[in-house]
Length: 310
Image (cartoon, rainbow, N blue to C red; front, side, top):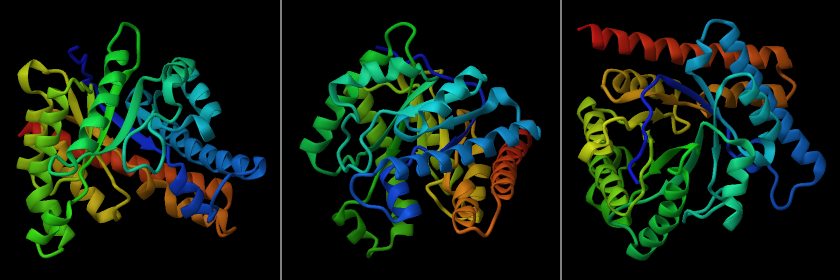
């Protein structure tokens, strides 16, 4: 089924981290107890408050979005939907090398419980990787794609990660930055083509940061090939430094077909750590997150306006 696409500005604050949040933020492993679960939910409420503060400070609500998981963010998803935000919810099981559904065959019921603007998946897919792995992932993703493209369902957001194969790293003598610049963009285009050919039809592609404008243009061309004219791309932050994220946003904003970004950890991680450690009040942490998110919105919009006015 053909994708519906999405072309409006979209500035997402993603905080759907689960396993990485438990271990990285709190150092917990294994099954969580009720108190630990509540503590993570409270931390995520803090991030949501940062988004709301940014909107109160001038970010247009119709362009603001959030991505949070059902496990720790069900109350946030309901409140955000009620208050007119664009919401996205992940369908993938956290921390897996191979895509699988968080809730198995019950995935549809969980999507319908929240009816998010976007159902999001994070997928690691390298066209030169294991063929069997890619085949099985694509089959599951087609099942989700077909389900979402029925009437009145959420749009499909696809976060594509293309981790390097050993042979690819060897070509650049183990230099991951060289891989990102010289090899990954071509692999991303091939991955998009392969997935489309296997019946996987996202409405929005979440794209790892790219250094070159030409590579951003190639992503849009791949996403929109063969009549998929309304499909768009957003750039993701990948937990990178503030400086690198700014470079990626500025580059992507200049390219027609890129409509925004999804930047999470670069926004919220440091303020959240300060709050966790008692070095910042709740209000201070929220204000820092709001300011950082708004800076990225302003940066993106300024770069977009400059490029499209030229």
